[in-house]
Amino acid sequence: MVEMSGGEDRNYRLGYAGDTLNTAWYARALLPEEWSVDYVTAVGDDRYSDEMVSFIAAAGIGTRSMRRIAGKRPGLYLIHQEKGDRKFTYWRDSSAARLLADDRPVLDAALKGADLVYFSGITMAILEPRARGRILSAVIAAREAGALVAFDPNIRPALWTSDSVMRSVLTAAATVSDIVLPTHSDEAPVFGDGSPEQTAERYLGLGVREVAVKDGGNPALIATADDRVMVAPRADVQVIDPTGAGDSFNGSYLSSRMAGLSLAASATAAHGTAAAVVGHKGALIERALLRLP
Image (cartoon, rainbow, N blue to C red):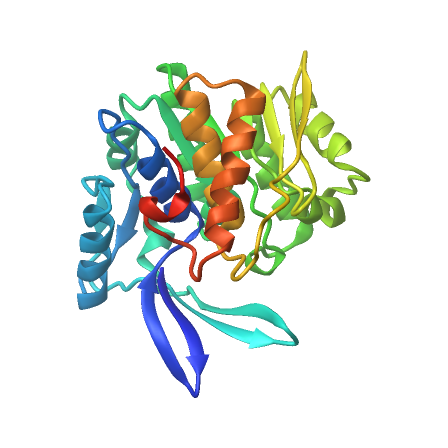
């Protein structure tokens, strides 16, 4: 999406970001060079779509699977301060990304040969019901072909037509996933989870193999059927801008797991990445600012 941030004296900075793009950005920054990271979406045929594609490609993220939709535009959001916190105002109705799953053969081709497929609840929320079915079917096909599937519910109630539809779709997406990366504070009011442990158990009960429950400044809970690991974040974190913290955690955690690191080591690395991100303005920071080897 096009991001307009700042807003001091009504002066905004134009950038490009979004939850799945942020995760892809950090996965690309942290994976070895021989790995490839592609971003699957749909964009328009306007100037800002062109700039977005160029921006993503310059980060080393593949753009071959980004469909062009004639007459469409990217989504847009503004970030502003309200009562001491950052608030977001979105314009998504005419976004090309809402059509990303309209062509099943193109979607299948984009996922073919992937070692890991990552998607989010926001991905599902912006799609029409039939398109949600197509993307789940494509994900299942990729999984049956050998891909790991990771999913962040990334719950945003305002994007859904009803709470019941939201719960149903998010649950369906989790059941086709190997790794789920929820945020407990988002999950609790929607699913009634009384603790991060309950969030983890609910997803494990759906057949998910691995659950990484984020919980803000509290320890993350990493759970499998046979193991439970609590990993605390760094204590010396200076928060300047929390935007992208969870997405960067996801990108770092997944890249670490794909590189063969343990549950605890992957969560530790993810906390370190998120700590660096929240210490700078903006969701996307350069690898040199991550203070990682």
